[in-house]
Image 1 (cartoon, rainbow, N blue to C red):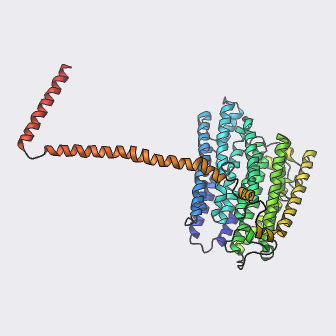
Image 2 (tube, helix red, strand yellow):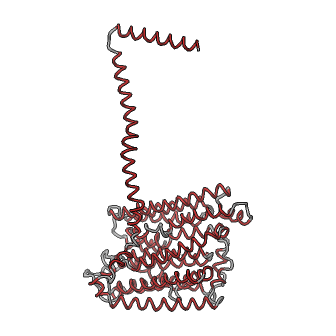
Image 3 (tube, helix red, strand yellow):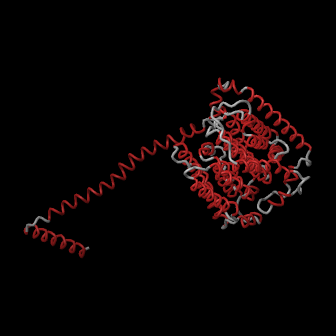
Length: 539
């Protein structure tokens, strides 16, 4: 957050909403700290909703743009779906346990408080839905690519390093529930693997540099979900920290590129930036290598631990799916670097070099991405360092490090070598291919335009949701507006008004100024009153 604040000072310089931007940004930091430091679910939910509100404000920061306003509204609505699951989960916890404190819940579960496995599973599923919405997991992922309409520092802080990881953090905090309801874990793994591969394929065909990173974020959080589903919370949290660093680096690097190219975001119109922006280019390359999982960068250790956890718990097929996702990640990383930074530029405009406030954070984050990996090496740190740090908050992490250590199992070492070598070869070939083929691809377009359009649209999920949800909802809304609002509600209101008006007009006729009318009314009233009294007393 500190580095992104420094970066933002340069990136947002001259923007009319400069002060408003930093108000929203610091309000977000406030709510994120509440979310992370909370010792109970209610306070966690306060931070959860706070960061959601700030995300809405920051995505639609340039609200004069219709696309930005629509993106903010879309993020807000989709997150409400996940939040509904979170709220129901909290209510079920209150009814079942009588407390929302994490430690008290953990102790009650350990003491076999009498809560059925079905109830624990229901709570886990509801909280999983909340986590899927906040962390943009399939099928509640559609808001994140459009969220790139906000300023780039927002993408770096909220949609790479912090808020989107809140779902993973929540699942780790409720690990006592997951350990008591193991049938939920395969569901989490399935969601994670599906999202990881789906988003990686979608990222491969994006041309907008920020949308590439957005789908990449969705994919990497999918791997974190896989770690949670395997019960290796330490690996998930380590990947969360590593991803926050190198993805923040990539988003800030993308912002520097966009700033230098006067707002250009199409990677097909870039090129040659390795020579003109050396600091940005080198730091961006480090971020891409860490994202791909190249040894000895931070992403290598966390991703290897997750893939081994999948193999150890679920066998070859899920491992192959995760391995495929890792290879596609390497492909789009190579494509991104090859098109944006190598070769000759397609942009005719002169570069606007980024300021020092924009480049210094890149250097620091690149340094962290390189050396964070030593936390995964027992040679440099105590073998149970992360497990010791996390075991008071999470259940089942005490012996996880030994289970994912490269020296613990020869099979893991073999799989690690296969993955590491394959990723290196794939990203190397990808960079060369897209560097050499750039000119031809730029002029002729993709070889398979329909498949490319399908992947670029995110498998047309927005169109599918429009058909399934938006259009039927619009039809029901229009029908309700006509028949319920206009005819029923307005009919009742207008009918009461007309009845009152009619009664008033009839009453006004009695006040005509003629004595005989008044006398007749009095006599009629006496007869009616007398009749009522007689009937009452006879009854």
